[in-house]
Length: 217
Ligand code: E4P
Image (cartoon, rainbow, N blue to C red; front, side, top):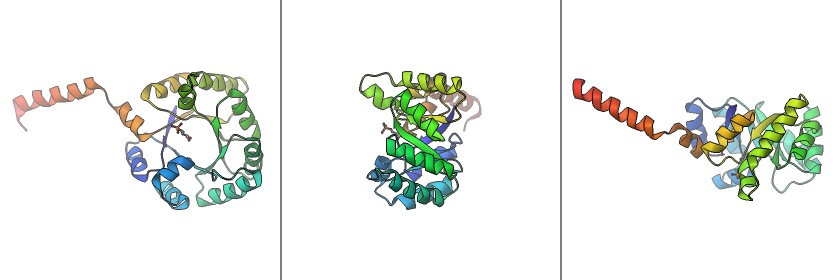
């Protein structure tokens, strides 16, 4: 399983990229709004940092296929690594079909069922983003959805990649790896949490104390 970082904050993206663990970035309208900056400006900066798929979503207020197609074409022009993120609606599927035929990569987002994932794949989506955490939030085990989509895509040789999204903690990440997700898009805070273990900290302290006791600084 590969890692993308799920943020529009360029400092976090730089830090995750410097760690050598991510190969892509996902953003969404809420993450862009949180930064309070112009979409095009932020996305351009991200493409300068990470050499891999960068998902930029069509405007949250654009709900018709024609509008999403027009915006998708503009997003794709920003950089060859751009992936157009499109919500899972009938209009969204129509936009995916057209953009895919033009060679534009798409990421169908807000996927909460295997049926939605299958439709998105058949419309030509390069990626589908099932939202794990938001299902957990309503007491439906999100991980079951990742297992289900993985099984169906494998059974039918579907090449659309599964991006496990709405990841809230390191356990989600490991569960997604076990379920066979192609990618997990992970908030920077969770990537940091994944680096930590109390025995690692204790081990470093002991190595330093033992070294200093004999060799000094
Ligand atoms: C990424 O593609 C999604 O937009 C993101 O993971 C959603 O996460 P959230 O449910 O924590 O907002």
